[in-house]
Length: 424
Ligand code: IMP
Image (tube, rainbow, N blue to C red; front, side, top):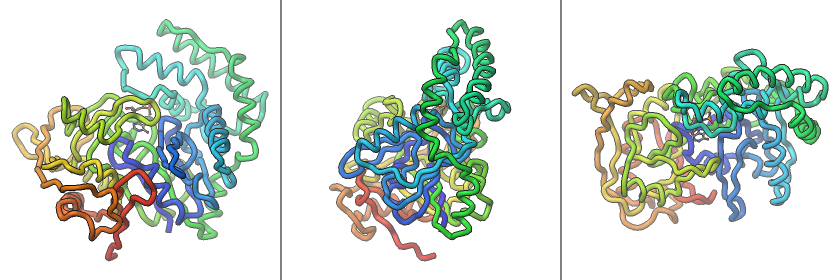
């Protein structure tokens, strides 16, 4: 089985933990989109580790980890992450990175920051240069990981692009960058990475032919997708299912199952519409209880109730077959538990999501209050042992989105996961 695991909300659904739990059953774990804007938190041997670029499978010995051509790569960040893992005693054995992954260069980050500081284009990005790097790919002027392996080629291409960016940032009154200030560091990172760089499209297709089990690891979430998310408050890649094909070179039939990750409530970082958002004391309570602070930026996350209208949309556009519900334990002791089951728009009840800002700004959330449970679910290991109210909550979600909840996470450790046997 080749499994796609993807976030169904605005990122931060707990994908790191879910993928770490699932990865041991797979031979290969692949990242296919996004960059170091992602932050996947994993508790490994009792220690909190945050991965930004490396696939979460790096903690499972015997698993191949691959960064596909769809990921934008800051090589300095990647080298730092590899070194940090080595010093934490994690051996990096079978790791590969695409020679065709676009590079993030210092001027990308510079422009990202300049745009964020301007009044017109504030998205609340992670300021890592993700958007400008993807723009260069589409603009047919990108540099790639493979360019790091040839110093002359790297410097020649970087000089042209650097000049282009300097014109842009100068127009915004900001200081430019000089190739001489970063070329050495980038080329050294290239030397460090040289033995890991390969044609991952051929590698992954060989794995497919050899029937090695592949886990595809999504970053961000479906509602941050550049085409299907809450544009313009989105990331610059396809975090929906299509990103797998463009970001790996694997063919359509390669995915045999899609499991979507959804948190038992909702969060969002950055700007943009969020119909089920909470404010005030309740928001503070949920944020603190859920530890909702960004893994990449440390920013406090916006929090709200689970939005089943949005979740149904994410399930629909991706063909998700089962859910991995995370952080159920955070709702311990909350009674009642509100869930958004529809919106009111222009006096009518609406159950179909539309990702436009115009629609979402008008959408008033309609909530249903479900009974909460007493005590904690964090020590529960089988579905049958969950309190009746927790099972009712799960059933309500399943009925609303039309697919089963296959996994329930009740704590941050790998073993705090309930797996349900599904009939089909
Ligand atoms: P960018 O990806 O840095 O360009 O940011 C664009 C939007 O996506 C912003 O709202 C970010 O907060 C959001 N975003 C990017 N990566 C993540 C993530 O891994 N988790 C949650 N939000 C993210």
